[in-house]
Image (cartoon, rainbow, N blue to C red; front, side, top):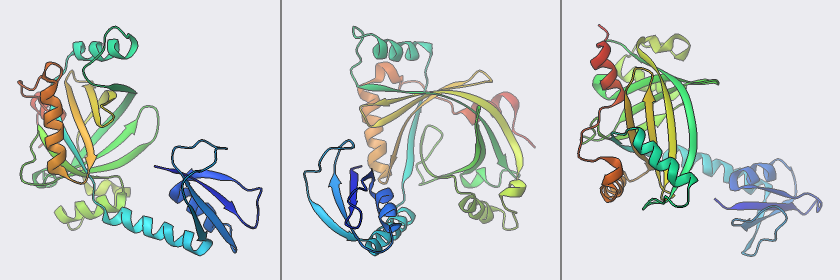
Length: 274
């Protein structure tokens, strides 16, 4: 995303660098008077933009914000993921490639760090899961917790190769739950759902080829599973891209064996709640 510099004509000493919409919000907050919105791709603060200038009134800046918000509401993006089995050897390979120049990988990789979180999944007599809806509360350790919902999309989704529409908006989750449970209450009462399972995950994340998010998950009940993920609008193309990337690097992703999702592994070990 390009950065922007905004110089109000009414105050030549004011200089503000930000992303497009943040800059527009700042411009709209200035009140009366015009401002200059100058596109400056990849520039750091203090550098001079070299492309084009665009005169933008404060009212236009406010309109830009509204258009952006409308675009966010109408543009549907999916999380496309494919699971794979991993062992400690996979992590060692990535670690060596990241910290030792004499151990390169055939694909570019960047370390995105660790996460430690606790997931609590909710349902009511499988009414949500039978409709491909998974509702959970994720608590970052230590940190905040938030509601999340994942709705499977398309007839070809399965536990190995999946397309999800995701949301963290409690109001959207409430509407999704209401489709399965018309009398469900809101998030303050856990949508009227019961705890289905709870476990803690240690996640190691990497970015491969500046495109694919590769995660290695290890749960506190002894199960491991990896995922290659993309966030995109075109699910079919993204699945094809992931499959091609994993096939090209089958030595790492072990495409021959069948991975087992974390929920499947959990219920196989502890049973499904009655």
